Length: 321
Ligand code: ACO
Image 1 (tube, rainbow, N blue to C red):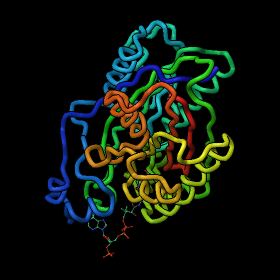
Image 2 (cartoon, helix red, strand yellow):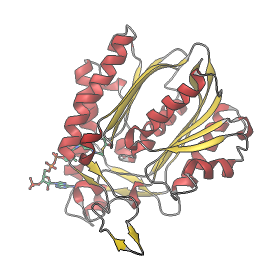
Image 3 (cartoon, rainbow, N blue to C red):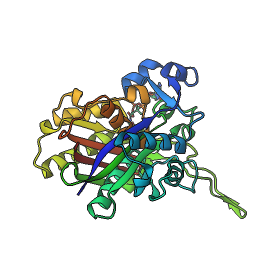
């Protein structure tokens, strides 16, 4: 049995922050941001929270799947920006939607989070343990971004995307690869809570997201095509046989480099970072939902999904819609 996506949902916070808005806060401009990243605007949570966006995206995915919350056996939430250390975001979603029969837990793998969570769902379904799982990718990156640092604050956005997967004998996830290089994790860092107790305090090293942009860029343009090629080879597929490539929306130039490596046209690499910025673990399910609702997928289509980022982590999925 494979995990097959049978419903999707997503949500973006109401507040839109354009590059022009950012140019009033830090020394930057629209032309610099668009030419380096492809991003024009992003959504920033004010009233929304990680758990409220996850809940709304999850409800929409259930509705799209025609499934009730009680039918779910598991909820997996990929996030690096939860509301609480405990309860996890997944536990909060479980309560909010009334998924009383589902076990719930979070998974932390930054921008690879949703892809890794989907692979985890696939493993549970393959093993015959569960048949119906809600997988969510959600981030409120605006709370870990230093709004005075022009090299990072222009990149990120908030949002959530969700997918309901169910066991299918033929379609769904056919194969996946996933990797970690913890030794290079320093390229993208952010402290958790400050180490502070009655007996001592350790200063924050990186209170907000710190990134070596060029190191991350080099990592992504090497590792993403490599992981996709591995999947293609292992499944005796050519890049041409894939209908759509749904990649993490970090940066337009990274996606263009992957397309060039695979010698595939850009229209097979849909993007929404222009409107959403980089929403880390939420970007792949957000884009999947937009494409699904726009009718871009039909039964039997071959898709590649890729996530890559903090950890460092990266991975790709080959699925039949
Ligand atoms: N506006 C104007 N100038 C800026 C800005 C800005 N927002 N940010 C940096 N600059 C300046 C720098 O200060 C530097 O000036 P200097 O030459 O006078 O020192 C100059 O622009 C070039 O800076 P670089 O950091 O070398 O710029 P680069 O061309 O590498 O672009 C970027 C930066 C866009 C972050 C690029 O490295 C990149 O795309 N990296 C990939 C990282 C990424 O996408 N991370 C997302 C999170 S991780 C993930 O999702 C995979």
